[in-house]
Image (cartoon, rainbow, N blue to C red; front, top):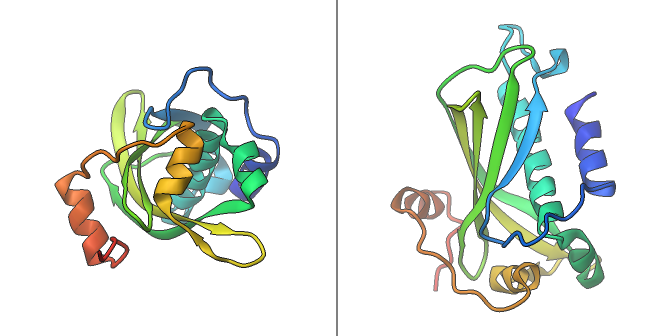
Length: 177
């Protein structure tokens, strides 16, 4: 199945909420590399990693029970920036785990880390700065409001790791206040 269809299913027919999962807990998505994921060199195409990450983020929202709450508000996620680092190639048939976790937020965006592993070995790491917009108007929703909605109450952001804070400044998504 193409990853776009996989994302469509993950978003329109999300998996069940994980009981007692907290907004700062990791969410794990398990996939297997298919022929459609490969490039001419027979390893996962770099664009496919981004599609797999979309699926991981949709599963994260499902795990924390966020789809219904976001829909009620009319909010939806968009990627403001992303960055990948690769260590090991993923090949046909490889089992893949994508661990998605929120690592912090500021007034503008939420920062997520998505780590790809194969049999416990780290293969790639993605950083994502995500925003939420309001359907119809396109108005930006402050990240703390989204986190509060998903967490069920106010929450102080964890301190961003230095490399993520530097990246956010470099790609100009960090809060400027």
